[in-house]
Structure formats: C-alpha cells, structure tokens
Amino acid sequence: MLHCIAIDDEPLALQVIKAYTDPLDNIKLLNTFTGTQKAEEYLAANEVDLIFLDIEMTDIDGLSFYRSLSRKPMVIFTTAYSHYAVQGFEVAALDYLVKPISAERFLQAVFKACQYKAFRKHTGEENTSFLNVRSEYQSKKILLSDITYIEGLNNHVKIHTCHSHKPIFSMMSMKEILNRLPQQKFLRIHRSYIINLSKITSYNSRYIVISGTQLPIGDTYRNQARQLSVQVGGSPLL
Image 1 (cartoon, rainbow, N blue to C red):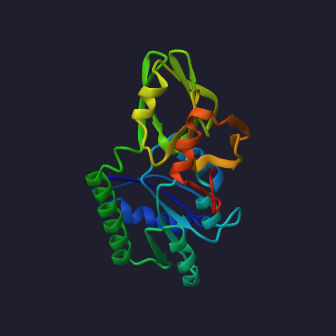
Image 2 (cartoon, rainbow, N blue to C red):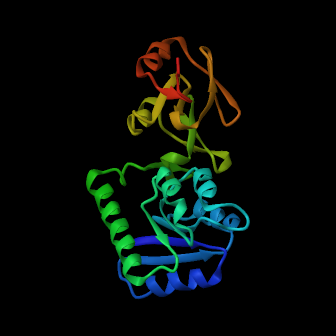
C-alpha cells in the first residue's frame, strides 16, 4: 500500500484528493496540509511514499519545496497551470495532474505510483534505502539519505544526520558499517570518517566540508577517493 500526503493551499483541492483516495485499497492518505512548514515536519518524522503537491502556493512554490527536501518521496504535482509540466518532470516527478482533476486521471497516476514502488521493491532499491543499527539498547532504522557522515571512535561509531544535532551511537567498527552501506553513495575518506557523497558542500585536496564540518582526507584513502572520479558541482572531487 502507498502511504501518501497532500499539500495544497486550497482546502477544496485537498477534499478532492481525499474523496478520490478514500475508496481505494492500494493507497492511504495519511495527512493533508495547507502549508509546507508542518508538512516538512511531518515528512521528517514519518515514512511517506508519495506526495500530492500543488505548485503555486502562498508560502513557497511546490517545485522549490520539493527540491529543498533531503528525503524525497515520489511526487505527483497538482496545479491549475499546464505550463509547469516541463519543470515538474525536471525534478523527476512521477506524474503531473492539471486541475480540475478527473477521477480517471487520478487513478492513472496512482496506478503509476504503485507500479514504481513495486519495481523498486523488486530491484531491491527500496530495501537498501535504510540502515538498521542497534543504539541505546534498541533497534533504529535510519534513512541513508539522512546520513551526512559517520565518525569512528574506538569500538563504536557516531552516525551524524541532517535532522538532528545529536548523533546516533552504535557499537560496531568502521569496517562493519562500511560493508552495510552502498559504495556508490558513501566513501571512506579517513580512518575515522565515512561520508555521504551527496552531502558534500565544498572540498579541496586536504579536506571535505559537510554541513559546516571540515573532515580531513587521510593519506591512505586519497587514491581511493581519486579513482572514484566522483563529480561535485561539475568538477572532480580530487
């Protein structure tokens, strides 16, 4: 089942989406929002598969809001203006619904979202989007896209995330946690640091900056980083 939310500054538009989703067994509307601030807080605290998102809103346009999200669920844009379609697909929108939205067109978009979720599950993409660790005597599920960097300290690691100033401690070695991370997204740059490549804000030959924190590149790992030819802002990482 798809778990979704809807964001639109017009309450009537939200009522239409609710009326369309209520009878369906393959989708559940978890919540609706007339503004993006509370929606962003909800997204940070809950697992959401899909967002129905209006483009023209009073506080921020839907395209900018979606681009700002660190964790991006599938998105279907809803708007009264068809000329935004190209921009919508530029941010990998799953579909684009022009108001007034017909029930038939809505069902087509939902079916497309269900197919895409099933495809991700079949390919294993969905199952590898989280990291499960033991922390403070309990199991914690961390979104990979939320991790900024990981710091190794003796026999445990500190997992730093973009949603909290307090890191998550877990009793495991750097080698163990590195083996559980996708190599195309994470890189060990130092005996004490593993970074999320998508979180790099600046760099030079000696260090990398992530979320305002300067992390050194160790001599042992310099060649490994160079060989990956990671692209940041159109330039090689090293």
